Length: 458
Image 1 (cartoon, rainbow, N blue to C red):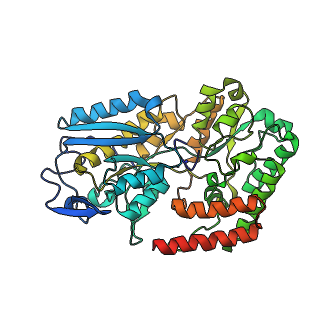
Image 2: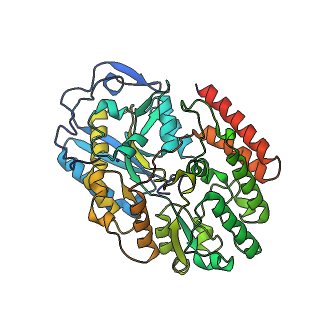
Image 3: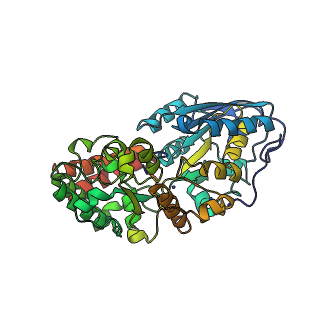
């Protein structure tokens, strides 16, 4: 589920080895006196210029998104290793369900000065928290933080602060890649060759239309809510969404945006999508596993979900290349990030743990877990034979091999929209899909509303 979670996309020269001082952090206090971060009182060493210093000790909270059920043993092991290396440090692990209210709830936690010390965030959440000043500027507080990561992924870990300056408030953790997951039997009924995936987004839409005509309402091509596709489809098509400074919307200037909305409206009317999914936050997981949707999530780990929950549908499942379209190469997907709260009372410990969690050794170990199809963001990890020599003909193995090949040239230049701006665009597209306004008017109004919000945000 591309825009969302471990289910909605990096240079390690050596495995990081954390000593008691921790990640290059020197001993001593992390600063004297109080400062503020997003309105919360914090140690002044947490903000401003200068390397973060301090002992790696004290209790911190570590928040992930929907990982404890499947990966409890792994992360408990990582925590145990960290605590063994740092006897004065304790890590309390909490796991958020990662639903569609995640960003708003996390921002509320930050405003209450209760944000977790180390937190797994996606791009929309990182965008909101960085702008409000709640995340540690990792690039400043540890100038060596970039070393483990592939440069393109490290670049993707920047978000704009309140002044519009791009700062590194996240560490790139893992990426899922993007691919097509589909039910071969349902495609065959629509006379679509599963071995020849479309090369453009509009080509994919044409296949959706074929499915609508062949299904007679008994099954569907995909889900309707455009929130899953905005701005992912625009990025893949090479449609510029925001101006260079990120302060205005420009997507309406490209005629293909209106064509895209017109296609979405046409497909919805034709029955390519369940009518009740237009505003639903549900991804395709359940309906695909029931054989009622031809195309599943674009997240490679979705294949694991199908294998575990619907073996009969898994036997009919295949994976293919997501259309390269105008971008000319695959998107790496929306990476998941690890951030440190600027409000942490034990920031040196939090930063030390964040860097330990994302180092090459731990990334490689987790990504080799047979239960996932995810990929690391460090050079050393991606050079491991496990990722370079993926084999097997089953959908799970094919997904891993396909994305491993993609990451050699994949783009990580994604458009980051705040939840408010994304929702403003989505709501106008939904109106067009319902036939309540034309595609052209929906695009024009979406850009105007996005501009208003961007202007208000400064």
